[in-house]
Length: 429
Image 1 (cartoon, helix red, strand yellow):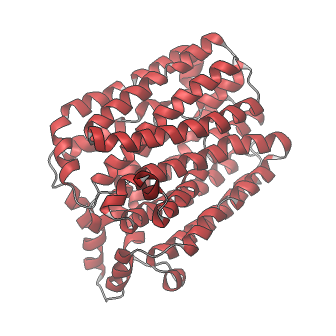
Image 2 (tube, one colour):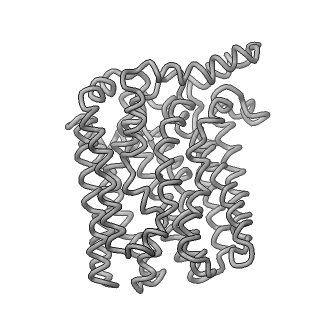
Image 3 (cartoon, rainbow, N blue to C red):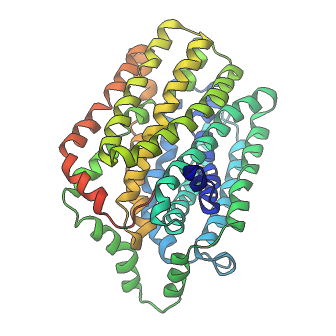
């Protein structure tokens, strides 16, 4: 009962809806876009390269100091520092999704790629603000619930833009599908308008109104956040761990949906299984992840979740052997989503625990950008590996790529235990 009350607190619910807004755009430039490209006649190798449009998620730390140190004109004055940026990024994101929907990948795939890149820029910018807002809004006792809640919202947003978009595209055009997805950004906009402004953001706004030289601004908002992180022992190895921990998932990139289609599943079957069993499994996995962190500790949770998710990636190998069996697809997607939800919650909570409250947006953007590098660049040759190896061998390789991150976790075991127990400004997402 106490746990239920914790998750039903108004501020936790705000984080849930913002998580939905954060997760919605990703599939629309990744797996869902991949299906559209495949139907338009774009070859598998080129579809794999399309993963590079997510590069802004890797580079968002470059402009995060602007969002940490400058108010958005007019909107920040009306709504508050963080909420002004939230509404601004969400409106531009909705517009860019509509633009992407009205491109023609069969005629001009380069323009489709450019529009998808714009969506990724707006989405990465929204993530910067949401992550900082969450850290500043929640108290230390709420951070664990916040991690599970934002991951849950994020996964539901991704499911809406995967299963939901695929279902819509079965009965209507792709442009109309993307217009409806853009309209769903209204969830985040309404949430931002109704939600409170964090006290820390109000203090930040007051400080920013004071006159600063360019040099002092750069030192406070660009140099200091990175300098603070580099004072930590083995900080380079920690960054390498963040890059590699989710490598197996990142490597698969856009391929699972293409795999299902080539096996003979219809878009309706993929959408139905992902939408029903995927949602249930994600909810279960997210809450399992949130529950085991306080019991096992951060480092042991990373071990358990990392190994479990790597093993469930082998379900793709079994699916390749069995073929288009809907029952087994339900089973494999359920396991994959449970362990995926567990791993994401643990990883988000871990990154948040390393974030200093004084440099919320910039440090979180740096750490989450590193984890996105794998998803973007390490997944670009996935289509080539599929053509050269075949599906079974490709998924075996993907599962094996979980090992480097676990080796680094073993090397950092004591250091990470210390840092995650003592870091100030712990958070989630």
